[in-house]
Image 1 (cartoon, rainbow, N blue to C red):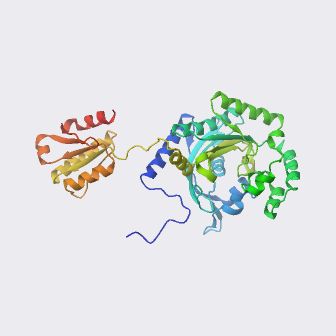
Image 2 (image 1 turned 60 degrees about the vertical axis):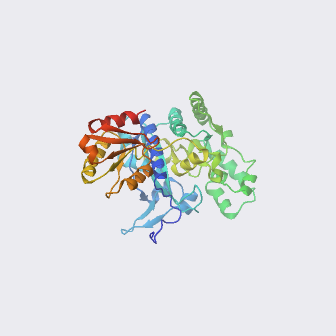
Length: 422
């Protein structure tokens, strides 16, 4: 009988073996980040609500419609994080990481984020992300580096259908003139009142509207790419040149905006065509004014958030060969109390030697214990009984082929390590 309780609607929840795959995907990213010199941050799951209002933007759907906000017992307004960048930047400033020299500050983190959206495949109210940020440099090489880390991670997982969509959103020098031209164009369209209000607050967000009836009217909209200042154009061309040098293919996407207000200059998204409507599996960009927006010093930055949930869906949709390391390589079967005691020590010895090992518990008979061995996914079973103890040996069984041989107890750990390494 199961519990009468269930996880809240829209929660992305994982159990073995799929949770093992999630963890393996996360660990593969940790290695990519480490190789590029990024340190790990462990962040608060909730923040002062004003951090997101000022950082993410009042006009965004995230802030206006999707945040989980509550008042704590001290009367403070707190919000479960809907994204990571604002919290990462807050932590960097609060702990003075930018004052230690050697900019940019290069950090990454992971965990759940929360948005009150309508749950559907690939879109959850509690979802998991990988976040990476480089704070304190305007160098286009840093832009290309962040893109390359994500790109190489996708490739390391065996994903071959990922597309990189790339754009530039300009800067605070060239965007105002473009904003005025875009507003003039949008005011002439047949749009609902809520969208018309958005035109006056943040017209670039209208370009991110996914409704077909709106998108059809946006076909002739002026594009930021045609209004970049000389510095922004040089920066964008340099990023594209660096990506070309790295052999990373991209698609120029002049309508790409992303859903958060803080983006400037380089903006990008990773798309997987097999996921249908929710095809975006990650994205990021530059946010050179965000530090000042949340009360910090001028401190340029760039980073990304990659969706773990959608990455797993992409792996499954594409049939990529990436798998989690086995939870069990060797399974122990004991016949009798003395054998159980001896085998318990042997399992501990195997684990200390780096071999994933488990055993049957509860004094199970041979038939039941061997069923557990088959279910464990182990390659080998080690079977120990009274006769084996007297002979100073253990029975080693290949669970796939069925072959069984006696191996001296003093040699079993070395033998298993050699066989598993083949």
